[in-house]
Length: 68
Image (cartoon, rainbow, N blue to C red; front, side, top):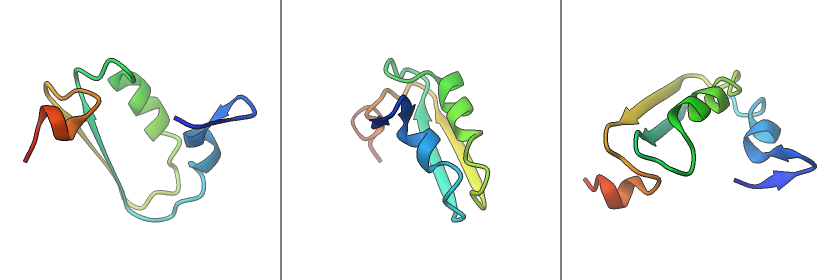
């Protein structure tokens, strides 16, 4: 997560995108928790639509823990 002046990149960029956003998040992510992901996703107020999928057993690197 990038940081700038005490804010992370989600806080800086969240209001801007008025495009579809897909958030994929694993339940075993030890870097960012599911509740924190939901908090950050709630900042994406301009996203149209915002779609969130929580991947059971997925870790921080979903492509490594849950390959297609």
